[in-house]
Structures are given as structure tokens and as C-alpha cells.
Image (cartoon, rainbow, N blue to C red; front, side, top):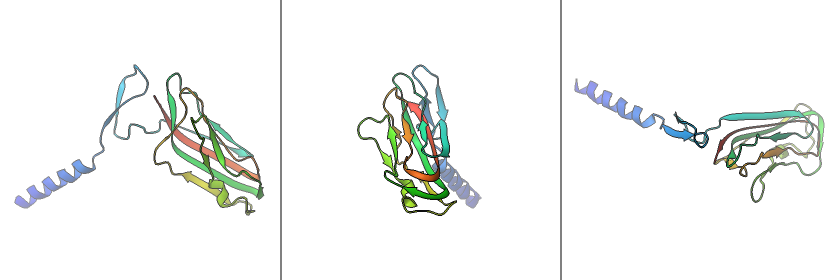
Length: 161
């Protein structure tokens, strides 16, 4: 009996330790507060663009007094022929207060000529979300100087003050 009681208490303690914390979250001023079992800054929207040549992913304007927070980002390139590149081979961002960040995941294969069908880039780790300027539709702008390459830019975000 003691063994069962000890095992039960241990399982209860482990379960309580691993259980997700619940946070309150308000989507907009005056909106109802909702409970989530995840982070309060979890992405609520994901967008992507893809195609040949330079691509631009523009986020929706969040509205007065709000900002878009970029939670996840991925930038890929796929060679449709033998790609060649001039500079810059970075993806830049507009609508950020101060110095705008630039991302260089496509440079892992380019500007060196890659084989047709090769894929470059990938997810860009973000420890904390990137905050866009208040009431601004920020954007990611892919590199313009790479030929024979399809670009994919994907990002998930949330809106908050």
C-alpha cells in the first residue's frame, strides 16, 4: 500500500511539473481575455509568398496602436537552373524602428553557382519576436540579384500593443 501511495504522489508531482502554464491573453483593447495553454505571444497568423525572382512578404496593418510581432521566419531558395548571384544576397525587412535586420540564409549556396534543384536556406531562429513599428504593415523583401531561383518567404506572427 505504501508503495502505491508513493508512486501515486510521484506521478502527481511529475504531472504538475510538466503541465503547461495557463496565461491570460487579450487580443485587442476591450476584447475578451482568453486563456491559452501556451505562451502569451504565440503566433496567431502565418503567411507565405513564393515564386520565381524576388519575393516580398507584406504583413497586414495591425491597426491603430498595435504592432505585428514576427514569431517564426523561414526563407528558402530552390534552383530552377544554374543560379548565379550578384550582391546583395540577403533578405531585408522594412517597417522596423531603428536599424532594419537583414537575413542571409540564401548565401549558404549562393553566390556560388548551385546545381539545378538544389535548395538553400531554412528556418531563421528567433529567440524573441521581431517587433514591427506601431500601426505599420512591415515586410520581408527577398534578394533581387539571384537568377534561376524560386524564393519562398514564410513567417508566423501575432498582433499586440
